[in-house]
Picture 1 (tube, rainbow, N blue to C red):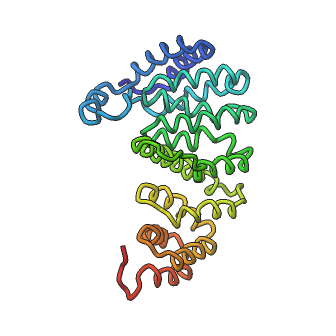
Picture 2 (cartoon, helix red, strand yellow):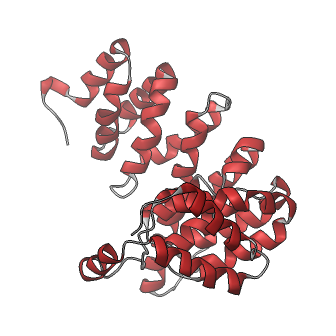
Picture 3 (cartoon, rainbow, N blue to C red):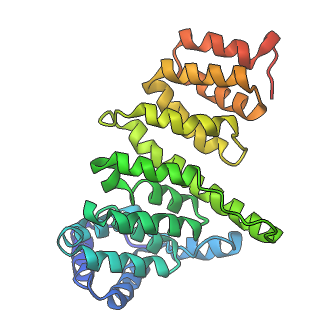
Length: 289
């Protein structure tokens, strides 16, 4: 893998992005670029150690960032062509291609939000890579999160609490598939909250609380890490409200999952809010699991 020489990389990417309106040619040129910068030794090692993951070119992050940067004017001035390109990139089931597809979605104008909100959950259900989930939840929704957060909150609600339409008598394996799909969308919804919670420009925290509370009551081991990722920055930003919610839920339903969440949020709360929670988490000075 050659060292990154920025002027050379810019020139290489400039030649690549000229093909933005021809996805087949773009993909061929992109593969050449990835072959130039990819870590082939690492790729072979990954094939032997990780047989279930997507193939990866192990391209340094600056390469992807430069491609997105130089495609940005086209996303603004020829958004439909970039949308088509994003779909083509996603269809090529390699890690970097899908990461690039996810990032490009977030550069499309807001009037493409319908397409974005259609593709993001579809791609989420086809995905098993944590890094791609994070990119879908953050990069792909970046424009909507900044310019129309209320629209995004409405969409997040449908991901967290999908309508139950399971017909009676459905086969057991289909039920399991539906459960996995719902978990994937819930992970997406929780991850999509993070940029809003972390942004001081976002003020509709009451909506975040209302979306989180039912999940806290039924937190599962699979979703706990995603919930705590939201609770911790939320506790630092709004400690009184988070402490009140955790205290109320612990009194109402002190199950092991809720106790786990509260324990891992404690250190992000000021001392005055920790004491009442500790009494509920560690009754008689004994840690509950």
